[in-house]
Image (cartoon, rainbow, N blue to C red; front, side, top):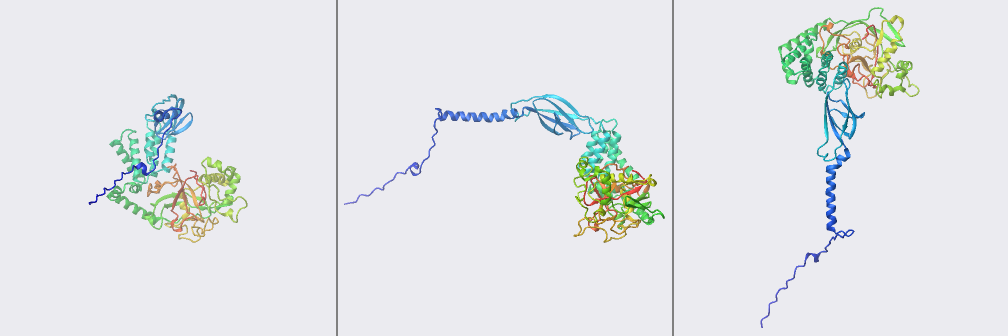
Amino acid sequence: MSKKKRKPIRRKPQPIESREERNEVVLKSFLGISPGLYLTVLYALLILFILFMLLFFKGLRDRGEYLRVTSFPSAASVRVDGRYMGSTPCEVLVKEGSHRVTVSKPHFESLDFEDTFQGPVFGTLFVRPRRDLNIDLELTDPTALVRDSLKDFAANPHIPEILLETVLAGRGSTTGSEDLYYFIDSSKYFVTNSLQLHSYLHASSLLESNLGAMTQTSLLATVNKIVQLHQKYENSPFWLALVLQDDLAQRFVDTPWFAAVLADYRAGYKQLRATATAARPSAGSGSVVLQGLRFVAVPEGELLQGDGADGFASVQLPYPVWIPAFSMSETEVTNGLYRNFVEANPDWALANKSSLIKKGLVDDQYLENWPDTADPPDWANLPVTNVSFYAAQSFCRWLTTRLPPAYSEFSVRLPFESEWEWAARGGLVGADYPTGRPSTQERFYAPDINGPSTAGSSLRNGYGLSDTTGNVWEWCLDWYSPVKYLFSSLNPENNNFDSSAELPLGAEKVIRGGSWANERELIKVSTRGSQPPDWCTPYLGFRVILSRYVP
């Protein structure tokens, strides 16, 4: 009997729901409203909200117009109802209603008007409600504009556009052309690279073309001015070699003309060096003491300014300057003497520092190192530091009032840097140091030094002056120009020790002598430095001179 084959048992696959638990979300009715209906309403409200935010919210929030203001010159302040909103070019929101708008800039006539501004609501996120205001401000004080622009360029030579903007700002002025020529001529003292030179030449050419388009004639007039520079300042070609672009500078110095200029300078310098003689005070010149400060005589003579052991290869280009006789304080002004000045002039007291800062006469470091109670040992004999140029000037005016009747034709003042260098050399020719060689008694940087030493502690030079290098830097009267020495001549009659006629404005004052914080090897009698006139630092003081010459 045959066996029946068993059919395999086929199992039905189980549905997924049976293998894992199924979670279902069932929306319930809300206040008798079915889910389908209230979801539709919610989606509609969301869309309406988005449309409201896109089309209406910004307009309802701002409710005003955007005023886009451009002006010439730029950087004019924009005020709405007296509130500062920005500087041109700018765009400001002016709320709906009537408002007074003022656009102003120093030395220009202000624009002042009242107008009604709308407050559209729809679509302002995409299309701003805007009105444009383009204005040309009318120059009212060209002299003041030139003065401030020159200070601005001196402080910010990395923004040479100041030159062109100033010249263009003076267009149309019937009285400002002379001021603009003065501005361009003075600005050359702060041109030190090719970018600044390009702006200088562009501005000069525009001025020559009467502020119209630059022409061949105006360019030739500018070139002619550079040629005239060489006629007055024989050394000005060295300035061009410095400020021209590298490839042009190389081509310039390779010309036979420049080679002849260089040869003439070398020959002239060698002759000046060979004929230079040490100047000594005349017999019986003596000294004078004012408020305990001794002044020693410095004779007249011809200074080869910037000279040193390296000769014409030094950092500066040496040139001759005639120096009249004067007397100089044998040391720097001390704390004790400056305290006498402060007691006689309470406006300069430490307690009045805030007022002095507001006037721009000092910074917050003024007399920072002065003791609160008793004086430390020998403090009164240390050179005064943390004093600004303006403080030193005020001290000079005070000491002038203390002069005896025999000195009625004299005044006390800060030295020009040519006078300072002449005195610091002490009669030596071609020396780098006051006594002819470095001295260990001069106060320069060392790991154990943290301030100046007693005034007069270094060796005296040939004129009896101490600390002309080291201890503290000393203020001079001159405004600082990094290239002033290149606008010079081998004829001393063309070089004036008083630089104020050629450079009456600037951003920083010259300082000389180095300080206790400097490396000894870096400071020579010809070393120049500069600081803003309101700065007060622990490395900077001053000494004064007694002179018949009043700048």
